[in-house]
Length: 405
Image (cartoon, rainbow, N blue to C red):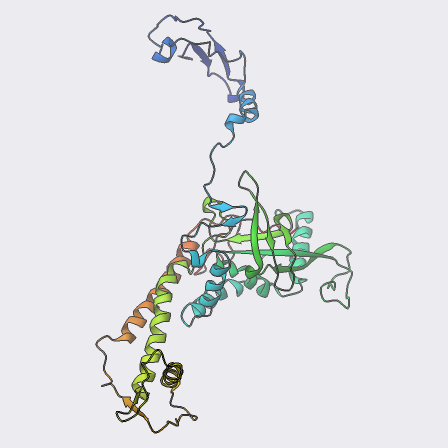
């Protein structure tokens, strides 16, 4: 069976490897028109003949060697010299964003929800199964299981550090190795085994606040990160060849991912501001609003800007009314020319702040829960089986494989 197109004949009989291409070369500016000739065959130009007897396997090899078959586009990640600016809110970019998520993770609503979410995973059992039924595969599985059991910190504690990628959108852990030579005075070098093999000493979290920038090559590949610890002025390079990189999303190959609290940032900000406003209002309702004024028969003019003594006295009076509180130290001593009065409110407000705060707190919880559930619906990247198991309430997919060895 032959299929003729653009002057070529393709023999499609036989296996795919045996399929060959033969050519009927069309040269010059004129070509014979047949019922199977398309408009492209009538255009002037050189011959479009393929090499005779070119197998399918040879074609694939030629395509791989052709640079035009490599990706020509880019991810479009907004990064400049390793500094990521993908987030459109400036207060959530870089160190300020890390500080904001640090504050949000201890919030009275978001904090407990994060801890409950992580507990589903950290309380799950770790299973290491052999790849097949051979003795060699069983020995490898026993060795890997022993490496997890021989970590400096327990595996649940280590997993809790890894799960900080939920809070910040990413986490990077550096892997420490050791020779398994039994007990040592150093906990980091000590081992439960004496087989002389190289195992894991610990999986240490790279502090998010110490991140300075990422190392990204011209092709967009993430090579590592540069960190600046608070007690060290030097930059430290951490290559990802000796670290594990976890993130919630691989969109645009963004190394920082997206925090599960990102959608809750706006309601969290409003709820935080309203809680403060409500507390101040309650305090003022209980204590009243202090009013300090000069008596009518006093000769002091506080509003005389040309008198330096009047300006200083006015500043002191403003400080008194601002700092006046009802506590065990409350009380005030005033000169004879001043009079202090307290304005008390009716105790009612036209706006119920409690309902508004509750609404924003509910939105915080809903946003976090939705992000966690949607994250669990993603296809696990390199986790097989998933971390929490298919039947668990929460399941997460990783962005990069945890290559520790």
